[in-house]
Image (tube, rainbow, N blue to C red; front, top):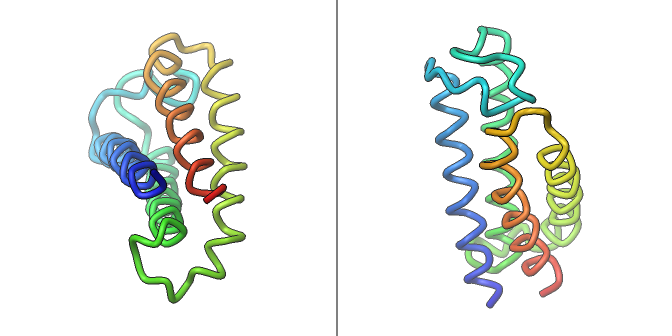
Length: 126
């Protein structure tokens, strides 16, 4: 069950990373993020934010995969603590995606963030 949750988590997070890469490279999907404040193509400053988010999300996936025992156990002890940071971040993400004024953002990212939270909790409580 834990491995399945970690794989689902990683697939979902890959989708989020690809979306952020799309914003970074100029796709006009700004209304689907950040409360819809930047409709159309992301401004350059926000593209830098997308880079930071991509890096953070990559490490979140790595932490979950390590915690689930799918990736090197060399950092298993670190992952025991780090997974709770991932869970906490996702709790905040769920809250923000549920209250966003952008209906489009809420429709896509609220369910995604809820699934990410649930799967990360399954891995955290293993």
